[in-house]
Structure formats: structure tokens, C-alpha cells
Amino acid sequence: MRAIGSIALAILMLAVAGGVAHAQNVNYAGTSAANFLKISPISRNSAMGDAPLSAGSGAGGVMFNPASVAGMPEGSITISSMKWLVDTRISYLAASYPLSPVSTAAIDIDYFGTGDIDETTIAEQDGTGRVFNASDLMIGATYAVKLTDRFSAGAKVKVINENLSQAQATAFAADIGSTFRTNFLNELEINFVLSNFGSKMKFNGRDLEVLYTVPDSPTGKEVPARLKTESWELPLLFRLGLETDVLRIDNMRLHVAYQLLDSRDYQARHLVGAEFVYNDFVYLRGGFKPNWDEASWSAGFGLNIRMPNMGRVLFDYAATDWGVFGLVQQFGVGFRF
Image (cartoon, rainbow, N blue to C red; front, side, top):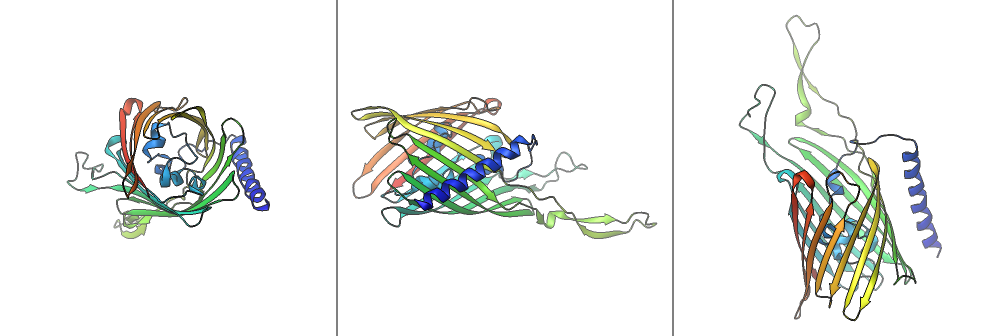
């Protein structure tokens, strides 16, 4: 119980600290790096409006709440890929394995890539004939434990790298999460998560090397120099989630999820989603983001297929309406063994 109290107190203090920052009326919009960490790479979560934070997404759940895999009785692998906005692509891989009946370890990799981009300059606005690319990479390691029959906690440490042509930046961060399963409203689950608490990102690399013209030099002398960039914060996120089954009839159930997402660089936003399950085989999903700029509704489905001597294979599909950017489609496959 002392461990539970300490974790709860730490999460409360972090939440209060985040609230104080917002209370100071400081506008942090556009001041975070590594914003790919805000994008859901998990098809199930995307279909449900990114609302889920508790168990249900398999190993991929550690992307949102490291406590979600605590006490999982089986190993799990999640693979997902999607073509995101303006021809970028996101690929994700996660794997978890139970270390004991109450503890689970997991690793995950999240990759965002732009592909080749035609290089242009002020002098050659139609293109130089060369190409470059940008990419982001996150590698994380998670440990989660079921402290009681109703309370779970987890922590994830991760390294984050951004690459823009020949300039790079690296940061280290941690996620802390918890799940409390109540004894009312069909065992309503309450989730608290703090994500991306860590170091700042500062770019270095060959693209920052320039020739500097010495002021007042009669010959226009140039000397090698290196540009100095600012350090940028990671997108600190605080999540509060509620989830429960509002309907349980024979082999059917309806699961609903709500999340309050408060980020360092944007106002608090809301996420809602639902999942209808028939015979633990067919999953129909939908979600809505009521106060977002472009993203609005999402929908999708899943199939849970039992394979002889292989456990289960799960196929997931999600489609999200991104307004002027069009429809983003996402595919995922999971394994439980």
C-alpha cells in the first residue's frame, strides 16, 4: 500500500505542476519537438478516437499507457503501418512478455518518415535536382506490474531521435502510468498517464555548418562557422481516462472510453470512443474528437482469429477523417501467444 500511495502522490504532483503552467497563461503553441509522439500508430486506438488507455490493445498499449500491459497472461506482438498526412508514413512495432503472473516487460519502436523531398533554395526555387528526407524514431522499454488485484502501474524509458537531412537531435524521456479498476459501473477503469517527461532536443550536424562573412572585411573574407540552435521541449502530455462496459449480454458487450488529453503546447482536448464486441471475434469501433482543429470522427473494425497451436491473430483497420487532409487509413495485425 505504501508503494501505491507513493505512485499516486507522484502522479498528483505532476498533474498539479502541469495545471500551474497553464494557469500562468503562457502560450506554448509550436514550442515542442518530436510531435510524432502525439500520433496514434495503433489501429484499435485510432478507430476509437485515440480514447483507450487501459488493457485491450495488446503490446501496443504501451504507446499510450505503460501500465496497460501489467499482468497480461500471454505474450503479445503488435505491428501497424499507415500512410499519414502529406505522403508521410508511420510504422510501429511492439512486443510484450509476462515475467511473472503480475509483471510484464515490453519494447516498442515508432518510426515516422517523409520519404524523399525535392530540395529547393532561394536561388533555385524549381529545385536543385537533389533530394533529402526527414525522419523521427522512438525506441522504448517498459516495465509494468500489477500491485493489487485492482491497481497497476508502469514506467517506460525511451530514446527519441529526429533527423532533418544532415541535422540530428536526440532526447531521453519517460512515461509513467497507472490503472485503477473500481468495483462499480461494471468495474470502471480509471487511468492516469504522464508522457514524454525528459530532456530537451537540440539539433547538430553538417547542415549547421556555414561560411560566415567577416563584417567590414575589405576583401569579403569568409570563415567556417557553425549555427547554434535553440533547445526544444518534448510534447509533455497528461492523460486522464475512463473506460467500462456499458452493456454485457451473453456473448456481446459494448465498451466505451473517454480521455481528457492535456498537453504542454495546446489546450486540453477530449477524446471519446466505443467498441462493440461480438463473441470475442468481431469488433466494431468508432470515435470522435469534439474540439480538434481538423480531425473529427473515426471508425474501424477488428477480427480476433484463434489459430490452432498458435494462439490468436488479430486484424485491425481504422479510418480517420482529417478534414482538408482527407481520410487516413490504418492497418494493424497483432499476435497473442
